[in-house]
Image (cartoon, rainbow over all chains, first blue to last red; front, side, top):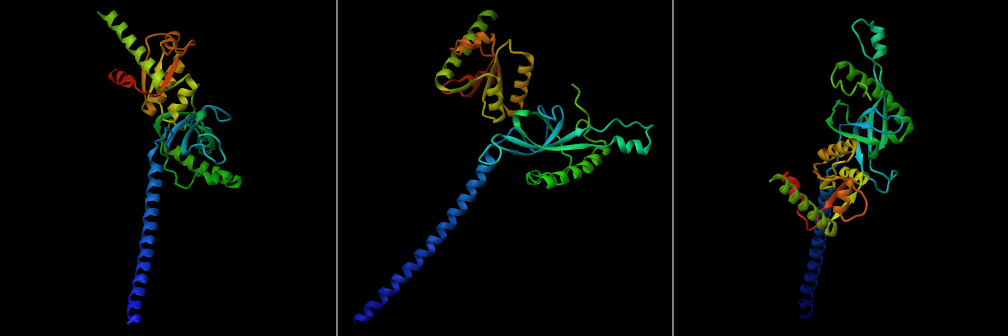
Length: 181
Length: 110
């Protein structure tokens, strides 16, 4: 009689325990989902003045007066840079004017472009209302490549060929012409 | 009666600025103005009438990009500074939080 009474009680407690564990697991999953949702929401809320593909003019430094295009934008945080900055690529040495009279060899020479890639403080950039999409591959200019000096060099040589192609299509003339001041 | 209306309008702006000075968040000067415009935190920029043209156009362009309204104060930097209750000149006043003031409605109406 006593044994019969004990057994059902034990099973009940076991059932309760497993149920509790299951509910706890579900809760942690839900919480994690909510957390990820909130994180993604906070990532997308604040709009920035400097957007991707925005045409920009560098105001200070070696490349002052050069036109550039914004690749990435980042705010100051606990990382390497203590300022709001943009990863920017532009033209250091502009291509020269090409006339019909020029020979092929001359044209090839005159259409050479020397690009630059730089992380610039937003203070030293003049934003414009224009956007230039040169249709570069997405992973061509990235912050990771910029950080590694060897990769940065490689990046610039890649950019040289890409920008030259773009210049020879005749589109985005404004970007490939020197700013007169 | 245009002159009287102008005077009343001027007083109106002055009163509203006074309320902002008490209850709101604001900055004086071009540097902080551009900083807040880059952050898109500025709601209104008040520019005096003798603000140098290059500075004025720069601020107007930035505020165009960041969707901030610009209010042209009908007075010099001396007058603007006094309207804000300060003893210095102010060519540019950036308002980040108007507090209890309705100065933003004024600029929108214009």
